[in-house]
Length: 439
Ligand code: 7TS
Image (cartoon, rainbow, N blue to C red; front, top):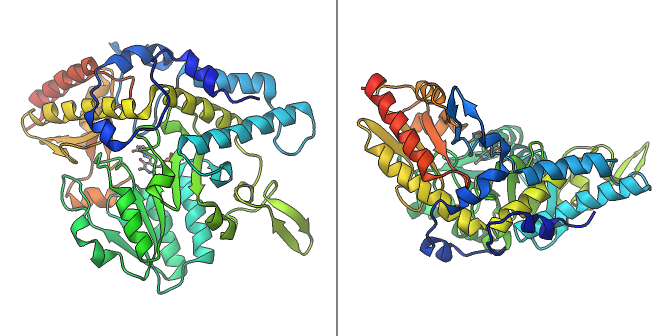
């Protein structure tokens, strides 16, 4: 199966060039609601009423919606190319293998990895962190070592390290978040980045605050003390120009379902020389080079990390999602999401008694807030009655919420198909909710 990159790009009529962009370029670009106008037609799920109102989908940090181009790619795979990969030497198996391995190459291109050998397919970000933590616990971590993460990590980049620390006797430390504006304590890095730190793991964009962490600088600092570096890209891969060689992290992970791709497929990127030295995560078919009753020998990376029948249709759908995203451009997506978030942040804050979390500027496209006197779940339930999908709760960052002294927040998270009209409507609804039920 040939790469669909060009075909898919043509199907999307946004007219943007496919290229990587720098952060400086992002800041100087302005974007209106053009993206929303041009892309909404591709998303069938958006065209429906919920509780008698036009759906407003603001839960994109949890999962994104899928365009027809991705749905078609998956259907095409099952209708024409489905077979198991690698095993059979027949035409369908060859096509399935080509589709799967082309998706690996497409992924390498998407994050500017040096080669497709550096791309491991997983079920998602969560499995990627578990794979890495498990493998490093067997090969790198010793009882006197330290794993350094941050206080704003999602549970999936916290619990696996807590489990591994427990198992290996290594210490787990947390780089502090300064306040509810959500910046890391970058002024005291020397205190935290010490030679005992063997692994530094950090979220790129916070899912509960919208903070964009300076991961390139953080990874450079961690590397200077000899630590391996991991960046959780679940909220950045589909929203922000990502270049893993520029960040110079050793590992980076993201989930397909958050970047308009299918569920059940994700990516762990790892530098090739390091992956070759790490032990496998799970054992089974496809990951061995030879097996005897006395034991196995393993394939090279990435295949030694992919035991069992992989998610072929997921990989094909993921490649279609990447084509779709790149045809728009992540610089344009970022600018669009950021301008919606800054607008929402400003306006929601002016609703009496409302508290907002995360940075006011230079933020990603999601906003956490609390309406005075109301539980976040009540805000979300009332908004749902008007067709607005928000998320309420701790957003799998429970320790951070505890630090802020709250059980959770309501969160509106945006993507390129959202627009100002939707925000104005949701602000109207939230103001009404506050008036009726808030303090
Ligand atoms: N890391 C971050 C920063 C995330 O936001 C999420 C999911 C994950 C890891 C885990 O991704 P998964 O695809 O493996 O589940 N975040 C959210 C969220 O904010 N609401 O629901 C899921």
